Amino acid sequence: MKAGKWIRIGILAVLVAGLLFLLMWYAGRVFRAAAPLWLGILAAYFLLPVVEWLEKHKLSTKSSIIAAFALSLMILLAILLWLVPILIDNIKDLADIIPDLCSKTIHNIRTFVEKNMPEQWRGTVLNEIDSKFTLISEKITEAIYDFVSALPGTVSIIIDILLAWIISFYILKDRDRIIKRFNYLFPEQYREDAVCFLRDIHRVVIRFIQGQVFIALILAVVETFGLYMAGMPYAPLLGFIGGVSNIIPYFGPYIGAVPAITVALAISPWKALWTAAVFIIAQQLDNIFLSPKIMKGNLGLHPITTIMAVIIGGRMFGVPGLLFGVPAAAMLKIAGKKVLRLISG
Image (tube, rainbow, N blue to C red; front, side, top):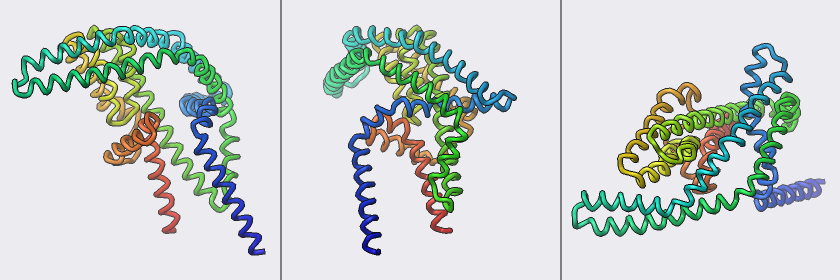
């Protein structure tokens, strides 16, 4: 009997290890194939506060979901029919003029260096500027042309978004039933601890995703308007990049400002200063007003932990790691506290 028990445990371990190996090996394909599901869960997270707010104001659950979806449909159509074509036109125009833009930028910087740099350093600095800007120009041009060539594939992305939108409706409609059935996945003696743990994870995710994305959208509008006022070309694209980059904690604002300031340098140093001022003002608006009001506190992480989460996440997983490294670190902190609590009794 004892030998049979160990055989069953061994078979189960092999099956679990094989399943994990297959998931890791095909993780990219599985993630892409299940994109409507992940996007649907994400959409449900955004719509849930609207649904709950409407339910508090005496609307039925079904009416609240329909109203939230009507609002989200208007926003989605506005993005697909108005914003996306503008961004695509900006990208195509920018791709055509990047070589000229980079040459103007290099000329302006070289002129500044020649007038202000000591003669003994001037030659080395100018050579370094030439080599770096040539490399940057090639990389940017290549990336933009790759993006433009991939535009025909946006049809499948739009289909995934629409499917996700439908899936999120059913997630919201049956959320109580889904939560109830999910609870039964855990043994009864651990169910209460598991529910509390998942509730804490839910609060971290919903606070980060909703807060950061909402702030990023507001800043995208503010920065686009500011760039228009500063007379910058491609203001919608550059403002959108600047705003969305704010989803990345700490480093996002600086990453988002680089493309706009680079384009401004090709026009004039004064234009670059005005552009930098737009991003500085937008960031102060975020620091002083938006983040304290919308985020309502941080995720309980020390600034060093947050910075390292962004760095490690970016180096290990690229852009997804930059975006989700901080909430992942917050989840690990919650899990660590739960494990220590269980060990200590």
